[in-house]
Length: 304
Image 1 (cartoon, rainbow, N blue to C red):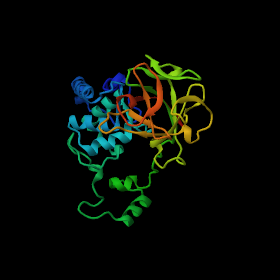
Image 2: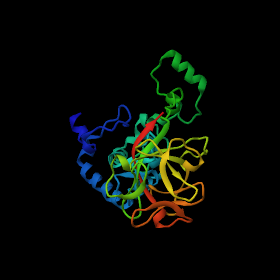
Image 3: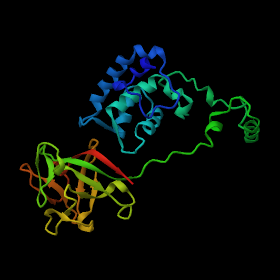
């Protein structure tokens, strides 16, 4: 058991690992090579270098590692159970190790798609009677008689409750401007001139389905002082509001071709949040350019 633990990144068994899965002994000699492969691809796809991969970046990395899109999508169910839309480096590497170890063959992996990463050994997916359609009456008889005959994968899982993800209320993020500095609320003044992230550079991203059907497309930004950013009528920005009205709500837009984590914020006036080279912040921009793009990094998540 101790030997198997050393297979995973940081010698820690992933919390998402299917119950009963054991690392094949022969894989222990390949772990360094596999980790190196994963690291090489990670450096190619993580353009932000923030320690996380967006879901799109994760699938792109897996494709470069020879993992098909169905396997990659299924692994996201494991490694992004909280639906944060980001995957840590540790979970990314462990996901690759799991796949290469034949983990998707395991009955508790619940994977029914095509396998390109390992030999298909999913005998649990065979029908109760090979070559014949599954018979529900036959299933009932076998359950009542407590026989030990093998059931199909579907039969073993059809009565299992479907796990429901937690509901995200909002998350704290930092916002890095084009000048390389972070957005900061000074309890009365908003500026983008901080080189590092502290409490004043944290903004709580909150949305409401009453504002928009797309939770991630409409938001309010709450400061460390428990006030909301606001776009005034003259397109200036202030951080003294306590209620999220129309002036305190922003539309989130992703520039075409932008990498993960890059967002633009459009105010009720139709203008965009912008920061100049000196760190002055306003909603004076009428279109999206470099100064209107913000690199947003999730720092913490709050659930209902």
